[in-house]
Image 1 (cartoon, rainbow, N blue to C red):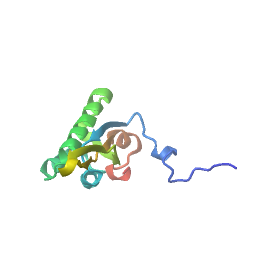
Image 2: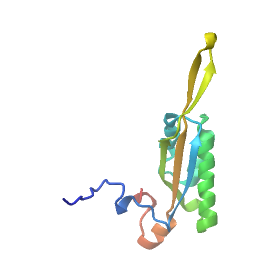
Image 3: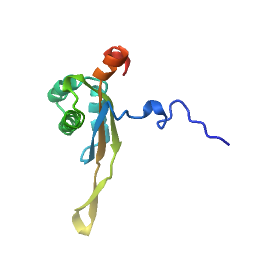
Length: 145
């Protein structure tokens, strides 16, 4: 029996990252709930780098700061490792995955212990350089999202 991969399979070529146009930053074991981080990530996915910075600096959530640091880190990777210009970067992929749960015991009365669970998450930010697409194919900014 032959296994055929479906079109939506994440291992097909359409989902693979292009090493010449994309850079990423990965933050692991960030002490934050995945739901709170996803609320922020959904607002910035698909936007330009400069627009994302403005949005994150004005949002009133505590979860914005670690995500802002990751986006700065991904842009620094793009500038230093690949030589990309920051004005040509868009956030092509941003995902939040659940990390390990830190468990602590809080002492209670009569020798009992109450379990405290701190959730963590892993955040991945992928930036794509759109100037290479515009020069080679003549596509607009919004056709590659």
